[in-house]
Length: 260
Ligand SMILES: [Mg+2]
Image (tube, rainbow, N blue to C red; front, side, top):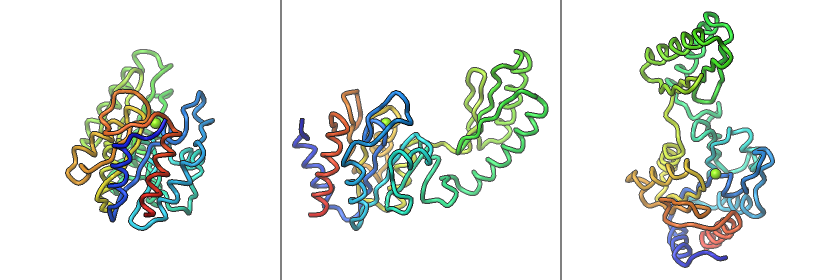
């Protein structure tokens, strides 16, 4: 297999721009999908190509993943003092921020208030469990007696409705209260604006990456995007490669072109 001539031409054009953002998903793009997610390892060549790209002028390089920041750093082997930006938890975590969180001050304050109010709720409904995620708290009622569980979920939803900035997602035995609308699309567009990129390269393999491709295409600032789907699923990306090994070939082609 080798890269399509269209894709190689697009890479050559992209490489000539002064300021670019090169971003990729991790699992299924740099690292093959495996049964146990913690067994995941990048294929040879991908991470070195990204690191070399990030050392070139006018080139910001980011890993954008659904994984939490810690495991993303560990599995990718990205140097904590290195040039790569790591965006974790679908955009809720950002390695550039001191706290590791991509939340603004209001959102962080709301997350603290939410934690306090849920602690009170837990006193009223013993057995309730609260899961902490980077941009949300998830209330779980599995195992509680039915009427108790219903009362606790109602109370959690009321709490969510009282804070209008919260995004409330009910499920079975569960309600998630989020302080930020995160997603790879939002994260990619924000990062591209931050670094004032003239164009964005983004590669991904999954449904969450489709949101990324669409958000880039929809935003006037990032409409000039070189989007690449890895695999053979339906996609709104403009280009595709077959697998992680072709992805490495693509990144090495981009590196060579950008080095000129
Ligand atoms: Mg993936």
